[in-house]
Length: 409
Ligand code: IVH
Picture 1 (cartoon, rainbow, N blue to C red):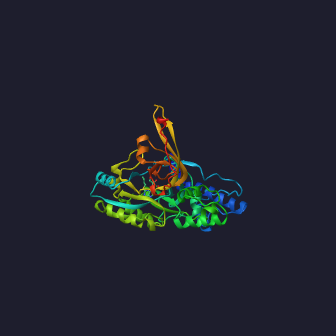
Picture 2 (picture 1 turned 90 degrees about the vertical axis):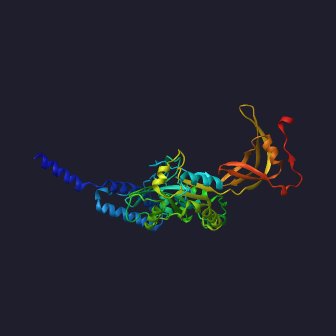
Picture 3 (picture 1 turned 45 degrees about the vertical axis):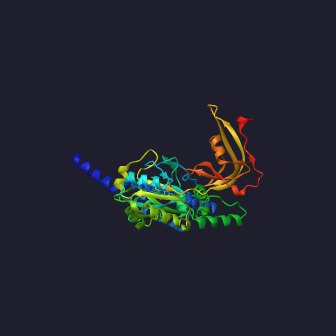
């Protein structure tokens, strides 16, 4: 008798239970739709395109038709803080090891294997976004953040309309892509700003990042962001190679990075060819990415705490920016060592304003033959640290002044 009872209770549970995936989808869609409705009915603004809203609403209606117990009345007027919350990444979001020379690239290929196939792709200069599809539905988009936790940008991404809300066949996926503004869309945005007497924005990369934080979703949509997916973090069943994974994603309607599959010996010529096309690419790039194509090999190469060993960013040598040297200050370190610090007219390099750089020591300073008032060439070494790499001798007027040596005072 007791067995019979247990049997009936189990049947009841199996038949009546709402699947966890449906619960998660409903919990995800509810606040997005609520936020969109509040904006539309209360504030007369649109958080997303009509098509994006209709697709989300369709998903929600289908879900609550199948599982009416998930339906909750949508409360127009209740503010929802969804966007901007921080969430843990399932896997640490690593970056890429960098190479600035042909020799460093050769060393990478030797370490990984010269008999392997490699995927070679443009390195888009935008920002990483991690996308999670649950049962075919976009369930979350996070920024990289500190690599462990990222900011929820699902609503902005939906508003931007850069990725499909649902994919077929339905699948559980975790993907990584680069969000960016094409040159054309960045210029169009600046033309609009100038016509409205607003200052033009300086860097497409920073603008793309800033756009994700806007609460004006109509403006997010207006700015026309783009995305290219370049990495599968999790996919079931997994693809044996990176190139096959990209093909599969493309067939699901996802925007994937352009990639070429080549042997190690063809990597240098492929880099040169991509280099040639760089100026014609519609998006900003800061290098070329080379990845071991076979996923088992890629995984067996392992990672350091910062990057996978099976991939490399061959960075472009940055274009130096010209500015004027204003003065040199000497800074005394804890050990008493004096370091010359160059102060120059502020310039924007790769999205950051820089105005000083170390000149390391007196002999380095003398070797550079710098004078106060000189036009100098500045880069951000390794994409970060400002460095003076030389002077422009043909821009000298004769009014430049020698840099005093503090030890000779
Ligand atoms: S692969 C595990 N491929 O470059 C690292 N990254 O640090 C997987 N990026 O944060 C990265 N284009 O945002 C890869 N084709 C591409 C890329 C690319 C741009 C960015 C990415 C990453 C940064 C390198």
